[in-house]
Image: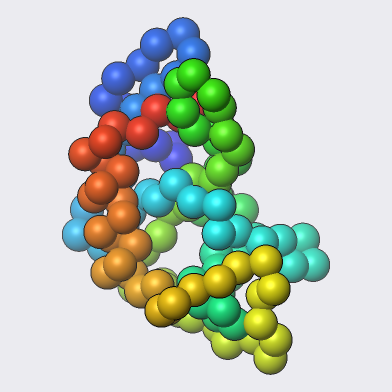
Length: 117
């Protein structure tokens, strides 16, 4: 099951716990690009994490206006950045994301109880 602990559910949306355990999180993001059909979480101007299909879910975020995004399940033990030989022109990072920085984003999203459908 992708969302292990659903907090609140309605007929249009639900909220869930973004922190599964100390090593596993789910983060809602738009920093995903598909390269040759493979999903990649972009974490820096030229770095990304290759994802398996079971690690990603296309979602709509919000309540009044729904915005497309991705729910990405990450594990600290398999967080292996890959450096590409080009920069992603459609992304701009002032610093590289790490598992710890994405964990902090997940905690913030958890506190705000981000609604998805």
